[in-house]
Length: 243
Image (cartoon, rainbow, N blue to C red):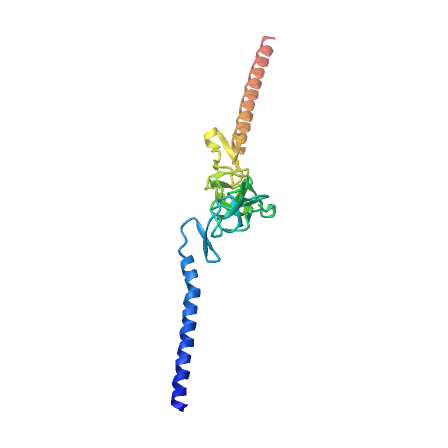
């Protein structure tokens, strides 16, 4: 056989081989392409569209051309929240006491556990209504007031008492004004601070007033003594003249 014929035959054989490979490739891709067209409420498995199991259950046996999907309810702290083609139910979340978490809503067959915080704590890292970690509220100490009370997801907001006011205990909602001693008819012995009230005492006599009173008393006593002496001398003279 001439070499040209052999070359043409080899070329045709190569083309047929490539065409065969291409056809096989298309055939193997067809089931996959069809599987992507499963309806809502179905899942794809092994090139077939099977009916999903309802929430709260899982797949025990996939469907076949002659039978539907076989499902089983979730048990033992497991759940599935949506219709699914899962062969295992999801494990319920455990609220970690080390992260100060407690159960807010218990797990059911159709809903996962929801974790929350105990009274006195708030959740700074929330995922929807669920919490990942809790922290204790900030305590507003004496000298501060609670500007904004904490919520489930926000901490307390503290603010320093304004000038002229005080708070003597933790977590007061408002600061109290200092007592105005003058308005109470007293004098101020000690000024108020951010954590204590002003100290008032009853008004007393000043040193100057006391000195004036003593001088006045001595003056009156001296005048009284002088008058008494004068009257005594006068009476003595009268008595002497009578004799």
